[in-house]
Image (cartoon, rainbow, N blue to C red; front, side, top):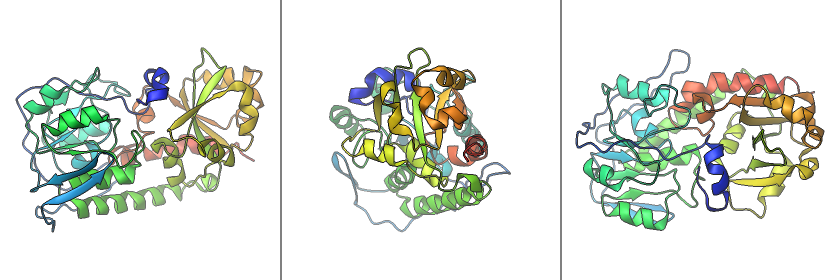
Length: 357
């Protein structure tokens, strides 16, 4: 994830959104429409209409002003984190997407739920933009999109302007990297001329989340916060603030923001804040800590003279998501990652919640 004053950790924190792409081939995939299905254990089906009742020109407002679509886009490109999962969840195959490099374990450049959905829709080799070192404008242009979806991204004004020379761009609503999953789906769906279908998809996912969280009553009302620790230097750490989609997702699962975290966010417009370990006493009200790491992280935290004073660390109510795995990547939720990982995610956090008395 990129953000101006946190650039030093964006390479470390990985777990949120590294802009990914693949090589720009002129071989593009035809856009198709189909019904969405997922696994047997967590299924979400959203009916997709070929002819949504949308009037054009269509105006979509965002952080850089507004984008006007003169007609329904047929060739959908996406960049950045998770935006491709919205069209795929609605049965639409993008002509190109950013390549993922965090949580990918098979070298495909895609997270498993994305890869599986492409295959389900009959596409074995989608076009991936290799934009890890910066947006690959040539590859994006080669895919000849009618619209570029980037509702969750870190676009700068310059990047937005350059992309807009290729095709209309759907940017984030207010600030970079601070689009919640519902808004990402709604904005990206609207950018495809599928606003009603996007609303239906959100409703389906909300119903799925409610059903799954009902199996974990121990989570209800618990004060939870998402952290990032660097085991090599525990002198400081990061707390993700309510504006971050990872942190906000915890409230979807029945938990609440600790008052201490809400206080930290009062005068900070970013998605995360750095705290010195000397300020660990500010976090006495955190019931559950969710973080990335290995199975040795909890021992390191409990051995640290300052961090061990946090009650959640003392009792071990720390849900550690193995770093650089699909589950870690799903901490920043998308239309496809939610149904794909919610069972595993809830089980992990539920085990931490069991230790809260």
